[in-house]
Length: 275
Image 1 (cartoon, rainbow, N blue to C red):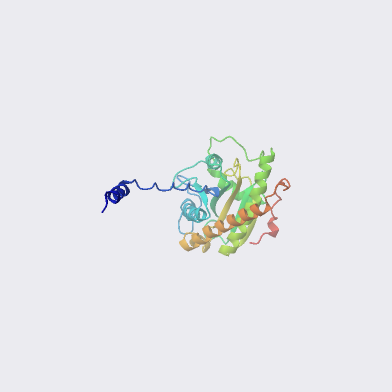
Image 2 (image 1 turned 120 degrees about the vertical axis):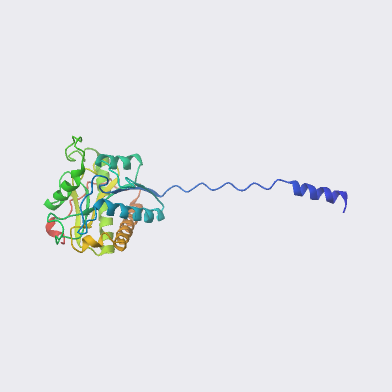
């Protein structure tokens, strides 16, 4: 072996390895969702016919839903990840601080008669100063019972004071319709309609925001079903499908020449809602 060849081999062996290409920066999330499992901590919410608390079931559904939305590319934040108390005003404030694209509050319904009542089905709400009907008013009153005693604010009479709120309400109406349709289709639960009511948990949210009543824990059959993993999976999958449909429709509608959003139409009257 010639001295020149030996030198070449030595230089080749001592050469530093080529640097690895820089790692690609992670893609930004497609959208941000804040999920709000209703109640928590000292607030049990409604109790099922088997004694299961609403706060536990909504948290289980929120965890399932988070995984499904993350598969859509979402960044998902929960207002609570354990059995802790979170005041109603804080929940919308979390969504605002996270600059969320949408806020979804998860709840379970309960009929005035308590366990054994025949009422069943799904209701979907977005914010309004006035309730759609007496039933919507009663639901809002029950959910608003968690409001801190130190909160001096009345209902939500000022929600239409500026154009941004009107745009948020229009998007909330569209989101409510998309999720509600997917839930009724995906779970085959009775359709109790999309309604409006003065929910304090939605007040102040600066994005599309809805409250879902995912079934009646007071119903002797539906109440038991809501505590079962298969039903919870169906609910979570349906909500995720509704959110995906809402996003697709929003992308299709987006245009520089798009007309300004109008205030949302009133929901169907109680007489037109199936029971």
